[in-house]
Length: 175
Image (tube, rainbow, N blue to C red):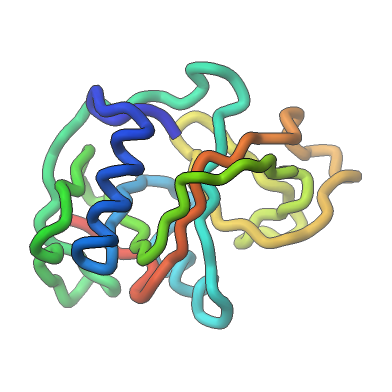
């Protein structure tokens, strides 16, 4: 998680928290191949699900987004499109065919803690540990001990920046 089009991390979280207070939800743009709408929706079907925003492994490890294309519509299935809710702040970035957004109804920005990434596996490939790479920093994860796995990440502990709760439809396509 890094700055976006010149807007700092704290300002982004504050803006999204204001969206939730004003409209009961917000949309968080992301473009990760490890967290596509259908995959996130599947993960969220049975239990309350949260997004944990963690610090990058190294300072400057998150590539800042520079594009500010505004999204105007969203779709949970790629067929039926709706206008983004009135009253939310801009959902902006590089809006192309891979643009998606997580949908949150709660965000806690005063979190003090550390996440042990070795305690999580990849949701779509449950025998594999989490892997964050540049351009793929949003992943669907399950709780699973990956301590003995030879392919686990070297950087084990990450500071928790913010926690947000996903709400229906959980993840959507944007245009």
